[in-house]
Amino acid sequence: MRIAYILTSLGIGGAEKQVLALAERMAARGHAITLLVLREPQVNQWFTRLPVHYLHIRKSPGSVFGGLLRARRVLREFQPDLVHSHTFPANMAARMLRLAGGAPRVVSTIHNVYEGGTLRMALYRITDTLAVHTTAVSTAAAERFVKLRAVPAHKCSVLTNAIDLTEFKPSTERRLFMRGLLHNSEDFIWLAIGRIAPAKDYPNLLRAFSRVLDLEPYARLWICGELPCGLSPEGLFERSSVSSAVRERCIFFGVRNDVADLLDAADGFVLSSAWEGMPLVVGEAMAMEKPIVATDVGGVRELLGNCGSIVLAGDSTALADSMLVTMRLKASSLHDLGKAARERVSICFGWERREHDWEQLYARLLADQVLPEVKQSVHG
Image 1 (cartoon, rainbow, N blue to C red):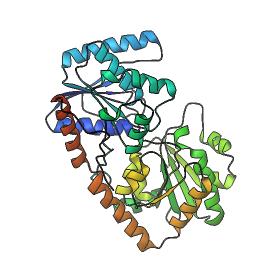
Image 2 (cartoon, rainbow, N blue to C red; image 1 turned 60 degrees about the vertical axis):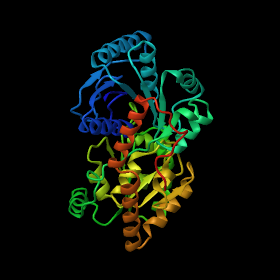
Image 3 (cartoon, rainbow, N blue to C red; image 1 turned 30 degrees about the horizontal axis):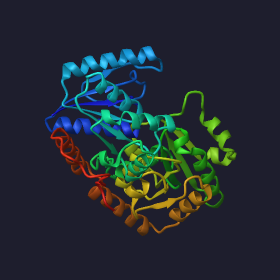
Image 4 (tube, rainbow, N blue to C red; image 1 turned 180 degrees about the horizontal axis):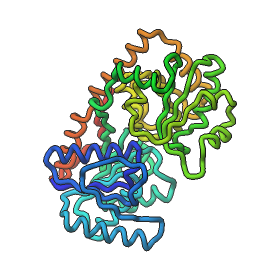
């Protein structure tokens, strides 16, 4: 097969990482692959050896038109059998390319339960005939888009994110080295990963961590993620109205490429999101055998199963209480929880299984086979 993937950017994010991993695995299986990226290269972005075509699209009609013309030229030269796009901007671009005769078959993937308001959902609905199929990274995301009539149920299926169990494998030596390097040999370290954005609800996390510190003063919080332009860590603290004690026990690492190293060094992983699709970082933390406390959003429950604590989104008290309960578990209980989490990822969310699922889906779509409605590809 010849497959063209369309992404909004290659910036450091879960969706981008997942698409690159899929594209590279399809290339390793012998398929011809090319990537089209709507935006210009980013200062911090994922690396790939696959061919990448940057369309340099910005928020103006002329830029969009010019970028789509460039994309059509690339696709006519590449002659794909199928175009697979990811997230709203790329999904719309792919559908416009289909309308312009530049894409033979289009598959759209939804990466979040929330990809915009009423207008975006209407655009999904209006342009649905330009895509042969839509997938979602979680059942929660698929069901919401079907309910909003953005996607018809008979054209929607679920293929969850996958985790690289080779990359995310715990190492005692690496853990000791990282904790020594960061001078945190005795503290209980909570790690949160994700861009500083409303979806991640970091004010909720900081308020919860403030409550944790009141009862367990040896705790620390590490945050890994890109700050938006114009916002500093100090500004986030001020918005969250937290004390100086919280600021002293919290470290912002910014954008990092050594997530596995930091997960190894941490004692627990916490997710405070207000909405999600299926957060890749939760699966990565599970693979690293970390105890997890997460908000009940998107596909978190589908991913985590019984291998962690789930609390209501926006409830900082419940989030703090679950963090405290986790910190007070016996070492043997934490060990068993971590082992169960990695086993669940291995069975349900490993890449070997998922790349086969994608290849089979592509083949069925190219053969014009009818697919079952909102078919869940993982059970737990």
